[in-house]
Image (cartoon, rainbow, N blue to C red):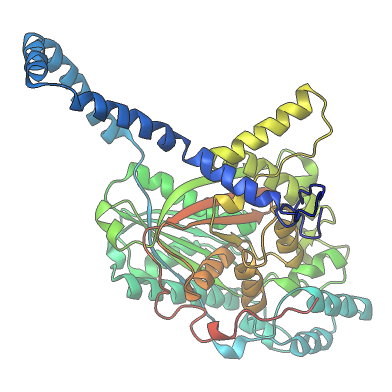
Length: 504
């Protein structure tokens, strides 16, 4: 096996013959096998169609006349069969799930004066007087290894000394993020707020009264019969959950739009203590948010960017370790923060395994499923010492949007899913430019792919998000056209600088 994980096939040289298979890797054989199995039905139908054409060409006019007479004598049977066919088609059309289209989305880009550089972060942390030297050194090391760049954004209240984490400041942060992304969304789509029939807002740690969704209804004067929902405490995977809820509502309510707003609020959730496991979120989480416009109108297909293909949710909350691995609590000094367990990566891996076990059969080509099944049978029935076959998800998706939760998360998924650096580029660059923006990070990543001009018609993209509870959720979208970035996108002023080299 070579360093790239590819198995070489070699033959003995003899009589001076060149070693033709020296450089042939099994990945090319596997690729050919994939194409063969994928197009097997077509390859079988071609000779069948050829046989039918040959048989039809040998028919004379008398044979065709006899067939017509036979059909005339069985007119009642033909009418009955036709009626059943029409009835069945009508029932299918009326009961099939409606297609859900992603018309457009907008990501919030905070003003430049909210950018926080590493030396500013450390200086402000020192001047607050809340952190001892050990905690300051710990935060410095986390920042250096985090994968974040020098242009991420902290809430305005954290730029003061001492910080001002008030309720009013938290509301102001929420308004800036939500209204900023919604204003761009409505401007780019020419959809009027009164046309919105469904509203879903998700924010884990800030849930005021009236709710965030009520704030949006009040700001944009949405109609009185709007179906509005406010999801709280569901972590970084809540964006996919919100899309799932909007999808279900769009199946029930015809001919309408749904808006999903995903954000997190940092103002009142900065940790001012010295417990190491609760200091990590300070170093990773930054300001951000996204607004997404979904539609079940067939007329929107022509202008929509994507169509929702699959959505799979996994919840590991029944397991105590998984439930507590991301946990909001007070430390011994009574200071509130979110604690991250040392078992987080192992728990995330287990949740991902469960999720892709469900997702795999929905998206993987039959060739990959057969290979997986064959190795499973060999291992279970014959006790063969074979490694579990990891399906090649690169055959199912052209693009991957892995939640930018941290460098370790992206590294592990790149390794375990056997992805290439190009596949995780959007996630790494999003983490570098915007930090961990929680549930909205997958939309910044999708915007990166579009800004690079890589999203072509028919491409499939896999959004993977992890969140407290513990949850792993996946959404699969298919591009309905070659997608260009929308105006005023989050990468508009900096895409030419990326990708950048991230220090090890």
